[in-house]
Amino acid sequence: MANLISFDWAIKKLLRNKADYCIVEGLLTVLLGRQIRIKSLLESEGNKETDDDKFNRVDILAEDESGELMIFEIQNNRELDYFHRMAYGTSKTLSEYLKEGEPYRKIRKIYSINIVYFSIGQGDDYAYHGTTQFVSMHDKNDILKLSEAQRKAFGCETPSDIFPEYYLLRVDKFDKLATTPLDEWISFLKNSEIPPSFKAPGLPEARERLRVDSLSDEERIVYHRRMENLHYQSSVIETGLIEGRMQGLKEGIEKGREEMLVSSIARMRQKGLDDASIADLLGLDKEYVSSH
Image (cartoon, rainbow, N blue to C red; front, side):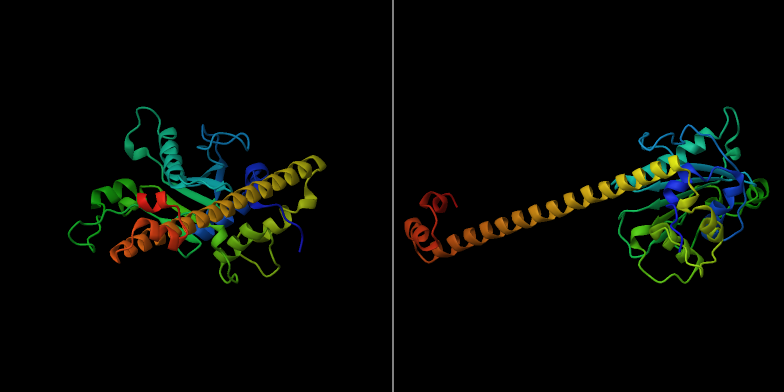
């Protein structure tokens, strides 16, 4: 198999030409369950300009032919508050694309596509989808719907069709054989490889257009430097986690020993032993025994 460019670098640096939209469209089609055609990539206050730019910026903001907006965020570095970042990204985009004086009904539907390469939240799956629903506080089967007038005016069926939707792809959790189009996409996102058998929308085009050997010499140097930096960051983070676990284990052992000694001192006192005798039997300083 050809050596392919990682999708996170490609989407930030390469997939800006209309001829390459088909790759991103493929992923959107798989996620949303319907054919998606990108009309344009939009300039936004939120679009990142450099790898080191402020956190609360989006990697790609796309508009489809129906006027709906798609935010792409791809994150390699661990962020404890990443869910907050997702909420911020959609709310910022909502406000950016509602012109001053326009009625709220002009708010556009937003899909937030989040691809993360670290553990976030608790769950067993690698792909999650979040929507906004209004559920009765007294009957969980009673989900609020739009009125007939609202459906005609807005062209949608439920409040969830108005509110942003979130897709969270936890690439690190994927460890299975790819059997569905979504599996194939996640496998590519994780391994930067597309076997000949993968036919999911967008992947055949990615296999041809995201070859490392298609980069210019300058692009190749920048790309390899970026990958080396990511490997280095990953090593630093992993080292910190290991050292943190070791320190925690050490502290846990010390705490357990402390609790055992205090319990032993208390039992010996109940047996009528004085502090000097307890210290001698346990190999402790008398001052330590007296203070516990």
